[in-house]
Amino acid sequence: MLRGIGSIVSLQGADLRDAALSGADLTSTVLQGADLSGADLRHAHLSPAFSAAQPVPSQAISILLDADLREADLRGADLRSADLCSAELNKASKLSGVDLSDAALMGLSGVTIDRLEREADLDGAMMPNGLTYEELKSRSGGED
Image 1 (cartoon, rainbow, N blue to C red):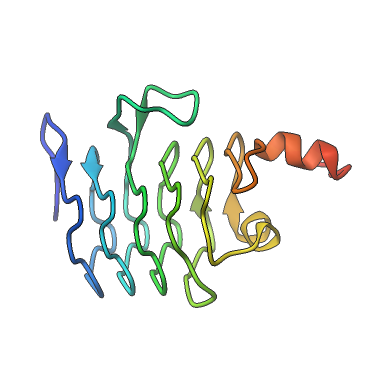
Image 2 (cartoon, rainbow, N blue to C red):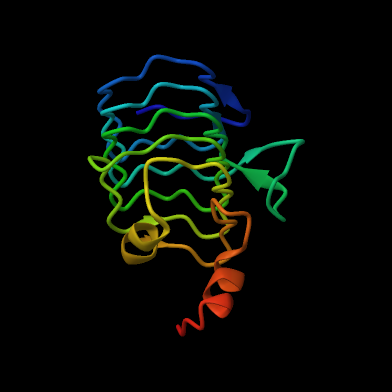
């Protein structure tokens, strides 16, 4: 099990293609620019890492900025308050039940907002178009 004890672990730019990280505790891990394509992150816990540059109103975020998540299995993963700005997903990325509440998703590519709404928890998320999820819903007349 990967675990950061008492400090931030940096895997910035790491090649984690097809890594078996199901259920991993990646608390306070920086994965900026990491290649996680095809990685199994089912039920992984990526709780907040501390970041000086906060794109969302949170003092602590997991950093997956520019991460390659194409074909990654994120089902049930805890990505609350994560920074997924400019990360890349695709149709093969598995998102069912992923918690993206309060996440920063600006510039996220390879997935539609409709799909995110169907498969993920988006409460408080900053969407790829720069609106919060709640603003997006209110502009489209959506209800809870």
